[in-house]
Image 1: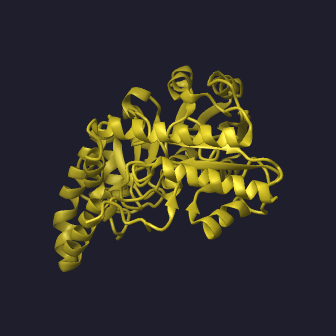
Image 2: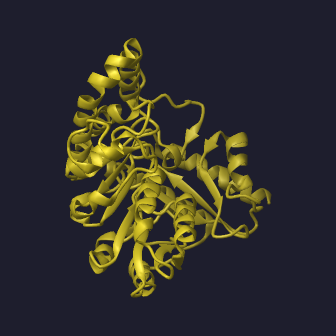
Length: 390
């Protein structure tokens, strides 16, 4: 049995967008679905909650989290929306939600809608890219905080620019006076990430990216003093105690938000175990190997382009973005035509996006255990050929 189900005729250098799930986790999900469909009534009413509690305990251990503060959601965007909707009752006209101009578009949209509903306003902190130090991130964000700031929403690892932000310094400077919502979509499994040690009020993260769980598995973690006021984006039986979840307010609210397929959540521990087995040093070795190959890819690309690395090595995990020359045709949407060319002509899946506006573009490369140096060399060869043809 192959460990990955990826098409072997394609070079996959875009793990950061949607992840890839190892076969042991997919097999566990199939087993769970078979059990669910064999007797849905028994499975949902008797088997589901104990299985969810067990999966939650294992995922919480991986994240350094108190299980009572951890709820499963379908993706980090849902986690962000749950927090923002819950905070609307506390926001007043003129209050401020600080974000960065590197924020993931979907989550920024959620903040804009919350601001429109409450009379608050979204305040963007401009982060340069390229940049020379993490201090530029900290100074820019903290420089936008005022006495009207009620929330900072900030990435652990940015999506377009692939920067590992200095979260510990930022959170320590603001909490508890200013609440911090960490969008950690890319963090767990890619960098060493402990939600309790971080100290933020709220952390949401995808399990289906670098933890390699099946699609639709993510978590929302809420610090102990913030839990009683947080509700899911979809209100259901738990609002008045109608779902018999144990473990406190957060579980009661989030564990049942309507009939769905929760097998991605329940299969996440198998994904964690399977990935740990890929390296003699377990997850530490997986993260290290992925990062080493990513830095190799970044260095080869900047050498090809004749530019300096756009960020310090310490701000890179297993994804890295490099600016492309303006000779590359720009697209009218976030996705650049070069991305389709690399797919159709070279059988390479890699992210090329227009950022920060349609006049500029970035190539973002992701590396996972299924990648090799030869994959990176093929990408560099392809980019060189496309640049030469312009």
